[in-house]
Image (cartoon, rainbow, N blue to C red; front, side):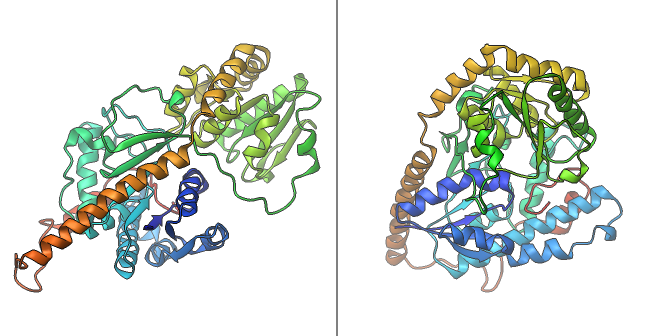
Length: 450
């Protein structure tokens, strides 16, 4: 059996889709060791997985001082560069400490993939967000910050600067494949429902669509009594938001308008429920409750089009009202609308009245519910964890043959000295210039804790 290092992001939206993959590999007898932030240790060990803390990354996260930088752009660049270096250090140290056969790496964690590449360890990526796969532009987290050139050219320059920070040369894959730079050239597992992928593209040989992976952490306390009766006497809907900011405030007002005029129960999840204004009695506010528990009882979901909740709702046959914001949300909403399971409102136009009318349409017209139920029936045919584990084992088998061949070759030949003893191979003409390039880039961070 193989030893696999899982470099994970502790954020639920990144972590939860990957848990079934790791558990299936562990069930088959592979030894999984997780490298993540120390605070996540109890959860991973509760799943029966070995754990290693990201010490360098944690130190960077806790000591970084944004006030030391000239402006927000410079601070974000320095923050991100520090995350790349730190995760490279943590992953490299662990790969040197133990003899791993492969690594399973969240592709939103640059640094870990660079360390695997430098160590010659094959690695597997898992895509848990909605990619724009056409190769026209790289926009997720990296919208065009350089307005004088294309987003693709800017991203290629940025990516190669990231590599230079840890001593790697330019990306070997051609620029036209830049959309896939974040993912593994060995094996990339695309999670989620293919039925919600609006793009119809030819994937690179390393990429494989495996289907949806739905997972909730074990309940730490009993469910509230009201969950059991939700949706029995009248339709119930979930409004899933993060905060009650500028965009979410309109959504809350729209949900409140529906609750006041329609015979419906509403569950509103908000990270900080203290910010929620006074709402009708048929709106129940809670900071968090597992969506997997609620979805079988719901008639509709309202959200900002996070990939996780949209996938979960589609697999449960529940139609959605989507009001996308940033990140990959516009692409998620586009795919759900194309599949016929969602109504999409532009955030700028999603006032209370339009939100109320859209929800009425979802609840009153059967075509969205029927289409969602059809998508749910198709979703049951997928076994993403098993397909992903099969693909991983094929990669491991190929790598064993390569390692044996390399070993036989080394025994049959004398080592060749390519450079002076103690001399490291130069990878970048001026790494300091690479860091300056990073610090000047205007982007949103996507690494643990950002």
